[in-house]
Length: 112
Length: 114
Image (cartoon, rainbow over all chains, first blue to last red; front, side, top):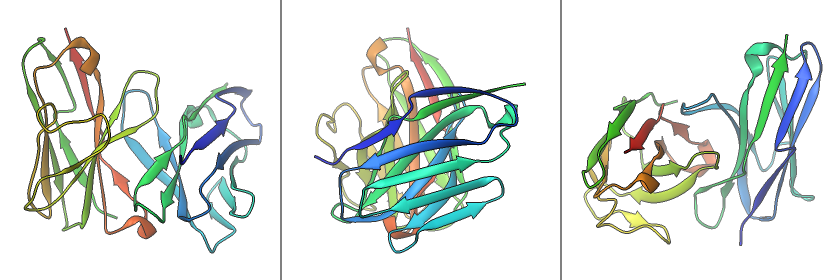
């Protein structure tokens, strides 16, 4: 069974801290890994997409890495802000099914 | 990436009734999916919407409960039929060319069944 695990489930940090969200997956036949942001009651916003042949992607204060051999991805958020408060979901694109397999998410709260 | 318009954004419905959710995309897309997100949970794939043919449902989801239409490459509907409070969830459509390019999500429909 394909599985995605995100650690921690919840995180609360003071504004300005750098933080790392973790995602691990069991399927080695992945096409890519996508990080999403979800605000309460809303849809998903794609943050970063890393192809299986890539090691990392950067967008502004966000950096995502991918280690396919160990089945791990991290999302690094630099200089966190209260506006970063949201749930962050990782999902890998399955090479077998062509579908996204989601983790349970990490709910982040950045306190002013 | 494609821009998705999903309607309605939210609704409160009586049990036993049905609600149809629309997903309109600003460009032709190959893949369209419908997801459910129950309160406090992650996303669960309901089905893949196939253009011009019956949707492909995931285990635990059936066409009688979640009929899906996809008449063309830019539009799809999901109906939640004979609703019960357990159907209260966020429903999301997702589109893309194929998995290697990543997928885009709509803004979601927040459904409450009373």
